[in-house]
Amino acid sequence: MGHPAPIPTPPGTAPAAAPLRDRLTIPVLASGGILMAVMQTVVVPLLPDLPRLTGASAAAVSWTVTATLLAGAVLTPVLGRAGDMYGKRRVLTGALALMTVGSVLCALSSDIGVLIAARALQGAAASVVPLSISILRDELPPERRGSAVALMSSTVGIGAALGLPLAALVVQYADWHTMFWLTSALGALGVAATWWAVKESPVREPGRFDTLGALGLATGLVSLLLGVSQGGTWGWGSPRVLGLFAATVVVLALWWWQQLRAERPLVDLRLVTRPRVGLSHVAALLTGFAFYANSLVTAQLVQAPKATGYGLGLSIVATGLCLLPGGVTMLLFSPLSARISASRGPRITLALGAAVIACGYALRIADSRDLWMIILGATVVATGTTLAYSALPTLILRAVPAGQTASANGVNVLMRTIGQATSSAAVAAVLVHHSSPLGGIPVPTLHGYLLAFAMAGAVALAACAAALTIPGDAPSGGTRRAREAAPGARDEALEGA
Image (cartoon, rainbow, N blue to C red; front, side, top):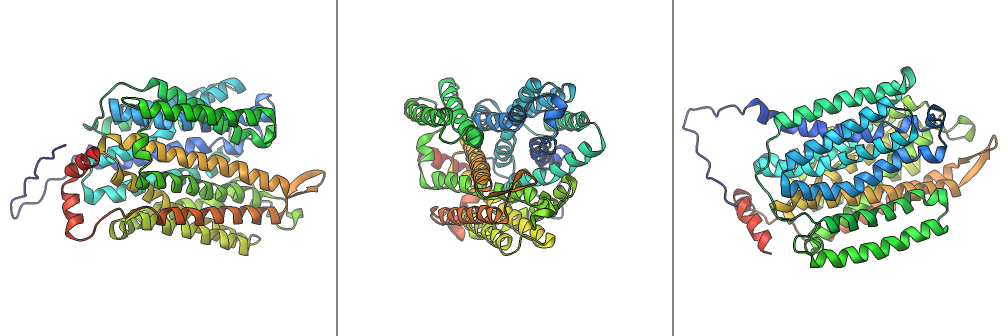
């Protein structure tokens, strides 16, 4: 892909200011990522009350979370591939529109079936981040790309940290439907802003869409994530769970065979098996596992009754505020991540981030009784997550052709999602196993929480080790500058590899 030579600015002439639309591209894309994360989080404060509000069982209510997880996991690689083929802005706008429609349906109904279907529609927004990162690669010069990609990747944690206290405040002081009307308005604004401020990328990967591959991947992922997310409820040794895992192995094995033989596969497995790409996906899975345990365990720990001897008995609003410093930290540290990646390479940034996550869990193990230490430990984990999550898309961008960036980053986000789902199941299993009765109700013990922290910290160290095994990602000196000056040549070389 050729790039026109830049026209030098005459001496003494100030460069023309970029049009307003161009200057708003990064803020609009970042706001879309934050809104996506907020939309995924807002239902969490409602979960204890939804059975009463909808007349449904607690098991049925849990599907308002599971449906979003499953839909997001399935649609992220599919929409990423569609963006590479048909236009990234077009698919991005469609994903935001589906998210908004889902929010409107949640605002209009109290029927649990409608709510589950609406939350599944909102899962389409999981593709917002990989699509946006791909757009940034296509539209921004190299000197601006790193910081923009780092910010975009951090929006997941920023939005999650903002969404919980926002939703808790609305639920506590207003009708719960108000929360979804608010997110509907924000979603409609996001759709309009994206269509106006974001240019359609000219980089395409033409070909026929691999419908069979999409159906195979969807079936395999639904079997896997359904078994992982419901294992604690149905029983890990139950016929349903074991059957789902067996189906996962069979379906994904057939899907792998089909993808290797497809002319235009949904996922380029030959690219995935390259060490720089494959190890980045492994690190993403492990980092997703380690990161998710932070907010999951912290929320339960600080809300535990004081009668447990360790709990603080905080409200859901106060719990959200405890996690808010981590979101602010993620926003502030994303530029630092870009600078480290530019000077040392993104694999070093990823390894450093995973090590910082492990240090955060060491703090949690040292003291999980004092509120300030809990907030400090959670914030350190969030800082490490910023470094790691910001480096992952940069690794992918440097390792794949321009025409496959959205689909490759979609797979990377999928691996994070699988890691988070596995983390949720593993933490739940640990806490259920280490519980004691309090007023006739089983409550996790402090030892159980500390074991969950130790498990997440160990996985973070495994992510650090995986990052260090990724082959070097950038030469130094003049070679690096030459490569940055000719991104088109680099992409062509990758495509021919």
